[in-house]
Length: 141
Image (cartoon, rainbow, N blue to C red):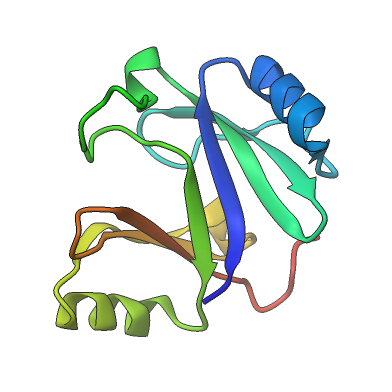
């Protein structure tokens, strides 16, 4: 899979965007100024950005404790910056992850009712969090 999505957990999306805009030249994606609602427990809102062909979001966490820091030990109850790998079939990918010693962190979910595809997260054999994304049949953007 190729990296197709990058999430930056934060407590202040405006501050996070300003940093990445100034440091890396990231732009708000069309519609990024208006947040999408959170897609899982602990996420208040999602603010999309882009840089070239890379899309992602500043994910506003419900609490500062939801943002992992460098000082945090591995804790699957927290989230950190996360790249997603594009896959053709999440169900087949999940089977392969489990077959090869990985674990499901959270199973397949529909993003915005499936309009933005589906996502799942896994824990690899080394304990790293890995995300995958299956695009919708018709791209939303």
